[in-house]
Amino acid sequence: MEKVREKGAVITALGAMSGTSLDGVDAAVLRTDGVEIDGFGTHDYRAYTVEEQTVLRAALGHWSGATLDPARDVVMSAHQALLSGFDSVDLVGFHGQTVAHAPRAQGTLQLGDGAALARVLHVPVVWDFRTADVELGGEGAPLAPFFHFACAKWMGAESPVAFLNLGGVGNLTWVDPTADAAEREGALLAFDTGPANAPVNDLMQVRLGLPFDEGGRVAASGSVETGALELFLAEPYFARIPPKSLDRNDFAEMVGLVHELSDADAAATLTAMCAAGVAEAMQHCPRPPSKVLVTGGGRHNPVLMKMLAVSLDCPVHPVEDVGLNGDMLEAQAFAYLAVRVARGLPTSCPGTTGVRAAVGGGTVSYP
Image 1 (spheres, rainbow, N blue to C red):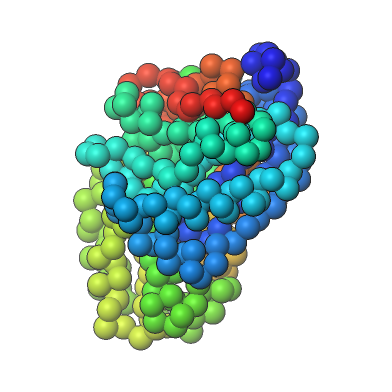
Image 2: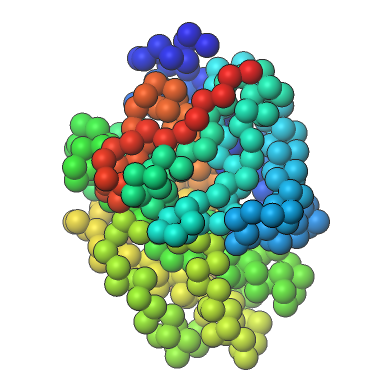
């Protein structure tokens, strides 16, 4: 445990992430001193069953009450099962499952008990990453940008790049890799772009009993309803100056906009809404990025990737093109952030969440 606190020492951290797409838990090992990436380790994934997804969906939007108990049990059992399979780690970063996010009102809520997990895993666990940021006036999200900054340094970028995470909600991180630290003014700008996979996943589940539009096949057979797309882009969120963040269900009315469309046209239109939100977001970048690197499940959808390539004014690539793992980048991010929390380094700043000053969130629980 002394090694965890020793600044400058490279430690082996295990990060876990369960995103708003509700597909499952990612876990990945990262070697880092909390500043630079020393190397990437093993990773694994534990899918939520259909029954577990139903339980988690029932908890969305709830801040308290008995509805959360079954969902909390699902989150803990899934993480314990997955994380117990990793050996020789010094520290765990445990994000938990976001079920409600309203930083300007109630706050943000992630289900999961890091202290209980530390007792089971016999390893220090860093958790509750977002609360401190919200308490200091931040949006509490997105939190991966500090890791994106480290990734840009690791890949040797010499000009601005953008990381685009397309999970349940989309978020963009603009990085100036010439800055000497992530918390420096102008080094980062990050914010949620709008809904990404969540509306399409929900549509597939309700209409076809499918978890998602695999390979974009349903969307590929449909046409975009431009009227619905225009109504979507009229949403005031897109005009707001970042940083800014969203809850998974903030754009729930999107499904209503495509209610009368066929399955294929509805899927195509919701997919186009995701791409259009990203195109709107790019206008907020301080300078055009040299490339957009896409991570998260959305990069597996060729229809969405083609829409992005057409609508953005710079090359669009999956992060694998620069040697990163787009399925595990979020989990690796929370391994990285866990080390920063343990060493008293900031994990968010005004440019990433709108917090009043750079802050290191998170609670460290020891076994």
